[in-house]
Length: 318
Image (cartoon, rainbow, N blue to C red; front, side, top):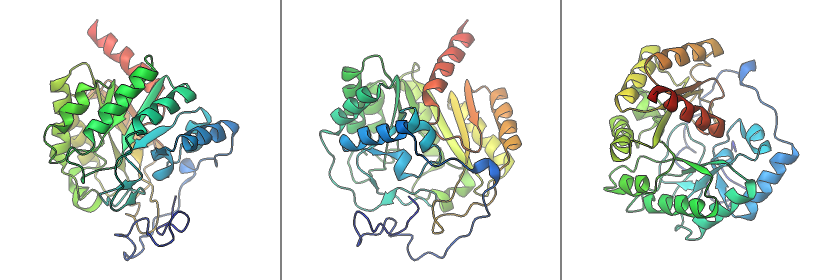
């Protein structure tokens, strides 16, 4: 998952056509705390077979997640719905870009069946951006949630959504399907948006998260950012304040890793003690849950974190 031209599935179609002609951006060598083992366990193979047999995509594969070996060994996969091609071209992301195919009407049921086969107590569903759709894919998210509820009524559901920018009423459709956790990542600090996430708007994303709580206060909200993209510490702390102003419950902070030399360079590898410091600061600001480490990703340990999130809310309600 580190190639610019996909010569396997379609030798004529670049994986990132908008990045092919960009100059290479060199990142510093990875420090020891970033390195992970290659995925080669039986559990990993079983998970991969279930995903492929149901014709599904995962963000674990498409985004080149460093935790795929650990998570798939435990049969924890994050399903990526609405295809494998994104309509945006964020500088940090390794998901393919271009014009996506039509939605697969059977996909919600396939996701539900895979969730049952994997025996997931907690499932995470994300998607590509679908700016080509009138609702940004909101109804497809809702159908997927309902299909999982029908097939696996005891499974808790976490969704990681796009921003539904300029899609009036889309958020309301998703919230009405009542996921247990609504996650939407800010990805970086506002000053880096034009470079890192040019298709998005920082305060729109903040407002999206705030609106979820206004529509249904029982839903847990979650957001995450990457560090190592040139941000300053005070900017990260301001993001924390902005998220708390939107009543967001859970914050994740992880190290940005460059997928290819055509993507945004890693400006700095943040050492583990700085992540620990961010975590302490975030808790003082009132988050119910914080996960901050070099290899933290939105869906990493999501099931265990959800249990802790529920316990934290219960403790504050006493």
